[in-house]
Image 1: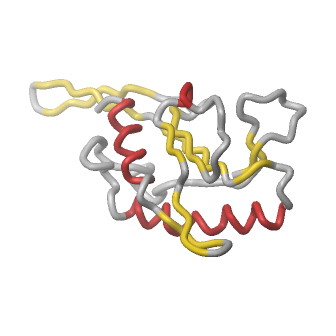
Image 2: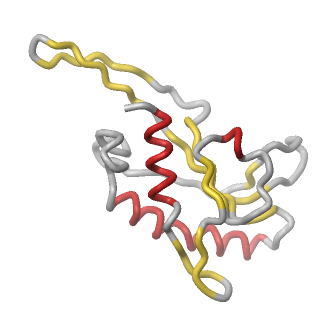
Image 3: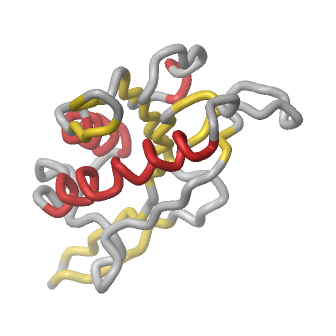
Length: 148
């Protein structure tokens, strides 16, 4: 399956997810399936989906009877941006933590991304990984940027 198709399916899975912080339910303001679209991130929370940088992607050959098959193994990364870094850190952490369970639940409910991939995760014991940190997106590396 194509990377673009998988990114589009992941976008459709993320769009309806909501969580609660502040005064009530919060949904994603924007979900970008193409990082080139995400040049201006004025609305939070926003998600950007891209092929994971600095991760080895590969195409492996498998044998199935007389037909050789290729398996494309790649990693998508989703940057979930919950606010600008000048927001108090305790608020940014609270916003980040509120998204973990709803996103994981949505992925567990749809591990084939609407049949666009064979499975997500490593196929053994890891569905997804995540980390919380400052995100530099379209800024000078010395600027604080966003958080997610």
